[in-house]
Length: 335
Image 1 (spheres, rainbow, N blue to C red):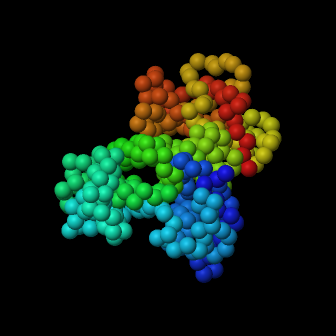
Image 2 (tube, rainbow, N blue to C red):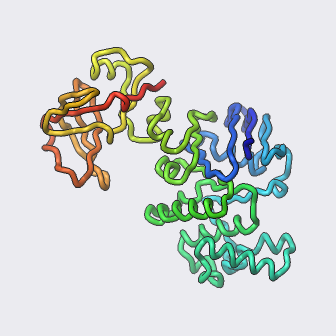
Image 3 (cartoon, rainbow, N blue to C red):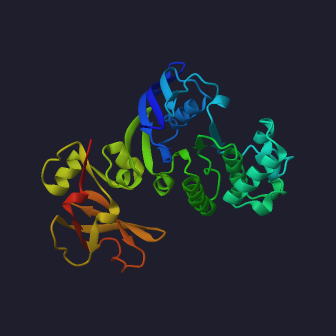
């Protein structure tokens, strides 16, 4: 039985139809990501679950209970947003304890819970510090601790890392995932960053214009996009139209086109052999991308991006002939 269930949820803002018959189920203990571009409806669905927005129609269930009309404070849901919203005049300890004090919990119990959650987020030594004395990443961990200390049924994270620099962001991705797995708390994470979604998620719901474009396990979504939008958004796929497919393969495409990941195309200065497709192409450009180099190779009038590890032997400069090989199973039909 699903732990969270959205049943035909719609949301209108005036005449703007933001969520369109969303029906999805989420299992208990998972970290699930709502992924998609800005304005696709992912944060709105999160806010409908939390009670900060009211669904225009449809029902929302948590643990088998219909919570559609419950006020936010009765849903047992913790929220962490991009903005830390910490009280600047309170220490870390007091920021985290604020909700417990409002709930009139005893002082010894508050101290016990705060110390426990500080240990979980790795900020025990910062408990007497003020927000201004913390880095951005530390402040975000305080915001996370403040939500966790209330022991919510579900934790909602609405793009909490988008304002943090790249290196710290990667570290916090790992930390949030570790904490989520340690506590086994059902977590919904909103992001527009496909790499972040793949690193952190058990399951991904890809949103497009108020609807679920594709739902899958993280790596299955990356390796098996079903539509043009999914292939374009989730990775750096080569997306070939029917016309491009005809130019490259000499036959008609089975669907509306195909998608091919740059890293599955084998490239060499020597002829390629093996089952699948082999081509001769011309290197037109190359761009370094960290540990890989992305080559632009023209084949039969079609440009293909081909990724090659940086520590491999460099291909010849622009205008040189190269040989490509693609396995049949790596040419994915898309709608």
